[in-house]
Structures are given as C-alpha cells and as structure tokens.
Length: 212
Image 1 (cartoon, rainbow, N blue to C red):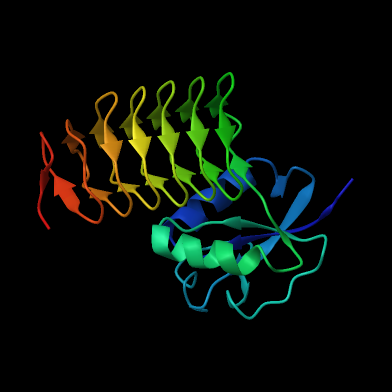
Image 2 (image 1 turned 30 degrees about the horizontal axis):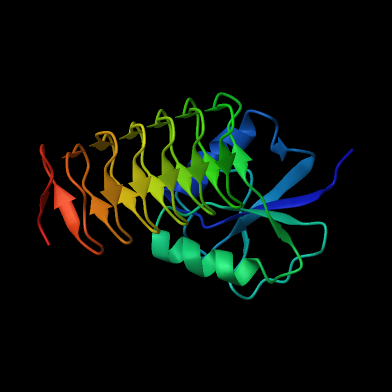
C-alpha cells in the first residue's frame, strides 16, 4: 500500500547519495514513493541522468498532509533552517535508515536524521534530531550527539564521547573516548581528536589542533 509522496530536500551530494539508496528499493521507502527533489537551484541536476527531477524550491513548496521529506543536506546550519521550516509544514520529516545500517540496544535516533550504509550506532547511544551519519561511520557505546551534527564517511566517534549541536566531522575523522566537543565545531578530514574542544573552532591534524 502506497502511503504518499516522498521528497528529498536538497539536490547536492548527500541528496544524490540518498537518491541512489532509494533506487535499491525501486524508489519506495517505508511505503512512500519518491516523487522528486526540492532545491532552490533548479539546475543542480542538469549534469546527471536521473529519472527524477527538481520539482520545486525549498522554502516555497506546499506539500500535502500525507507527504514526507528526507533532509538531504550535510551542512549543519542549512539542516537547522530546513528542519525548523518543515517541522511546521503539513508534511512530515522522516528519518532515513539504509538497510545495511545497524542501531544497537537502547540507542535512539532523532527525527530527520540520515543513517547511511554500513554505519553502526552501538549500544546506549543518543543521536539528536537531523543528524547525518554517513557511510561506514561508527558511534561507540554511551556516546551522545546533539542536533544537526554531521559525520562524513568513515568517521569514528568512540565510547562516552559527547558532541554538542551542529558539529561537523570530515571524512575519516576520529575522536578518542570520553572527549567533549562543544557546539559548532568543525573537525577536518582525517583528524584525530585527543582533547576536549571549545565551541565554534575548527581543528585539523593528528593530533587535531585549532586552525581557526
């Protein structure tokens, strides 16, 4: 039974990755049929041979009560804007789980999150609203993520780590156990975090050091 229409918010890299995952199930997810992308850049998919197109802009579209959206954007700040807008619309924001992802015992994932292929959320983990856990990333036991965090591919958040809101981790970044990462921190690709990080900074390297 088809429940309604499904749309991806955004048409950039993450949105196209989600689209490729939907193709695996003939563009049906949890009973909803994919109907297109919403993006302000109407030309964003011109170079791609996709069966589905951009059907409307992000903040002007009017969706129906039985429609649902997946937030296909990696930028924490843009995710926050989309979440705040669409949570008050008639449609529903859903959480996307790739079929190969794993969520362990007593772990919770917030609304609007995207859990990518072969990612693992182990036991007693709390993931906030609208988080992106991309392919092959892992979150260890008793860790917590605030809202709008992004873990790019192959990231490792180990046990008892705490991430604030809007933390962005580049590909293959890692955090050793029990470290606290404050809000709005950017951790560069390949970095290894071995200390607590204050709000609003960008770090890079092994060990990770502040670069701005």
